[in-house]
Image (tube, rainbow, N blue to C red; front, side, top):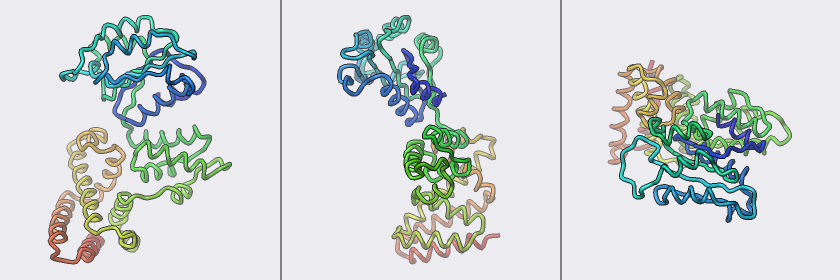
Length: 340
């Protein structure tokens, strides 16, 4: 849906009223940015672009601005943010909003104004009169957090928007390196598109060569090699991290975080929870849950419990200086690699 809106905007197909809602910040921000590019010239933005934060500004003011003729331009753009009155949340508002003013405006929106509502909430209260009016009159755009497949599809579509092709394997690897963050994926696609020049395809080799691997991704890859019993490759990653002057305590903490996520994911999956539900409960990106679920299949709950207990002991021994930090980590990794 979001890509359809982006394509329409590129062709000059602009609606009078948009309502963007959802928790995926990048999709909200990028869609607003594209609407702005399609509606307001840089030369006239000081006159024809208004942004209202409804936590501080009254809704009446935004509606009045929307009814004002543009100056030195064909269109006026009015953006209102944080309309918490569209949700079912019960919280004390700093400002009393006259929602009836917006309901009246929606019946006959100004033809010279594009009115954009940005609601960074998971869902809107569809029982409310104003929400019903928006669903009838506005183009509703859901900016939801994407699951693993949707994030990969998003990456492939981003490449297409740059007139590039990227296959599923390369896209999945890019998503992995970007930790599923859409803003990072966008930046990397821009970089890869420039890097490949006239070449039409972005390959897996391009991604591996150009996209930097974060410490967290190195830790994930380390654990991935361990669970697949790849001793030489596991130790190589570990020694490379030490050569990069990564602190053993930090490496251990990240390993512990990943194993905790694997254990929690295994528990919730065993209770019948799906990927999206697990991500919501653990407050992590769905893509991280997908990766953890893949790794969890290779461990029993008892094995994971023992590993986490061992890591807790190591944490104490490192921080109290009882044993050499690097030696502790090496012995721990060798223990895991010996596990049958």
